[in-house]
Length: 470
Ligand SMILES: Cc1cc2nc3c(=O)[nH]c(=O)nc-3n(C[C@H](O)[C@H](O)[C@H](O)COP(=O)(O)OP(=O)(O)OC[C@H]3O[C@@H](n4cnc5c(N)ncnc54)[C@H](O)[C@@H]3O)c2cc1C
Image (tube, rainbow, N blue to C red; front, side, top):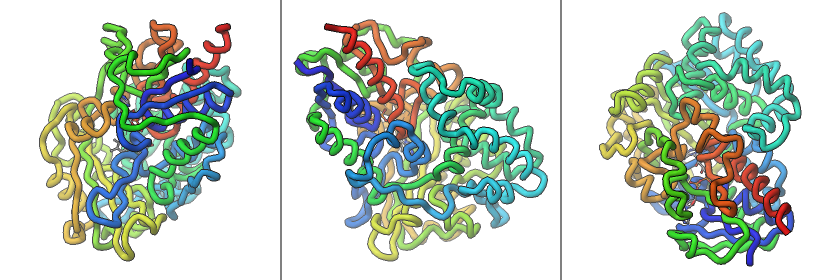
């Protein structure tokens, strides 16, 4: 009998498996696809020699993750490559606000009226960042907070809606960049705790940057898998789990899946019936004949570029998909150009480029034209550089990965109380009514992104249970 079986080899499944194997438990992972990685993969999606990340590409949460930082992943081939600027947000006048490593440079890009307000917002948390992130990512209390005072102060600033926090800024440059940061979780700007979302991304940039992984996000997954195998763990790919009986006998079953799939596979009935899925995304991977011709010079030096005219336009795009059930005419875009830091992704002089916009849950239309019209506003001539494109809307994303129900890349709406308390209102989100069944996917706290913390926290719940048993 194995100690633990993990279903799904995404970043959280692999992290949970590693954490258990490091503590001497026997572990096997079963993955539906033919390679490990889930949302951290790399594939030649368009033309030979163009290595695309179909899902995650920028890793502010990965490089800052307390779980990944405690593992020797560099020895297994993971190398973070830092663009000159973590992120830029270009404007129509050819200028840009930037999220730089330096707080001063970032503040300066907002203009003199908001520079001080930004420094006053960021500085108190940046000095306590490592402890704060550890405490924040361990909520709801899988570990006692190391610095409860700073965590409480962060709660006071982070729990209110981002629309309130943005009132600290007098000009549109800071507001727009901050609105874009909040939009990474696809939640309306006025939602609970959306200030915390924007703050975490900004603090992550100042602390350790927003790198890409050399060779693509697959190298993170491959490093986790190689480390797991060195620790004695086994990995079985091409193995879709449909029932618990498909798995070998084990003392614990840990699911890196959606709550819906888990309930079906483990026979939990309506236990997660209240779980809500959120809007989807429409993703385009481009092979380009050269770099993106951004008008703003700063955008040419940034790994990630947010595209959205101003905070009102971003808010309207989020409302359209979350509340009005329609695709926005001017979608807010998150784009990543790994080639500014990693020359290995495309043949010499060519580039891979990645963009997605938000669409309603399960949307079946084609957003390509709206995405490219939006890009042309800030990078005229973009379309002329396109050699090939691979598009994926909600149905294709869900077919690629069962966790992206209706194209929801967060595996569950990251809005309202469910942003913090997922997949149920519970102090023990990683356990289920079945004593041997646990959940570790991004449907659990601290939620979406490639950082492995749901896997780390879930593993802790598993090893505590296993150690209690004879
Ligand atoms: C287009 C896109 C862009 C993104 N960009 C970023 C980004 O830049 N930065 C970032 O940090 N995050 C990004 N994300 C989010 C990130 O990829 C996810 O939050 C993260 O991968 C979640 O990890 P996970 O381990 O919980 O699940 P997943 O990565 O989804 O992995 C789940 C795994 O379980 C497998 N599985 C599911 N059901 C079964 C079953 N029944 N049997 C066997 N195996 C099963 C799946 O095949 C998959 O491999 C992006 C996601 C998408 C889709």
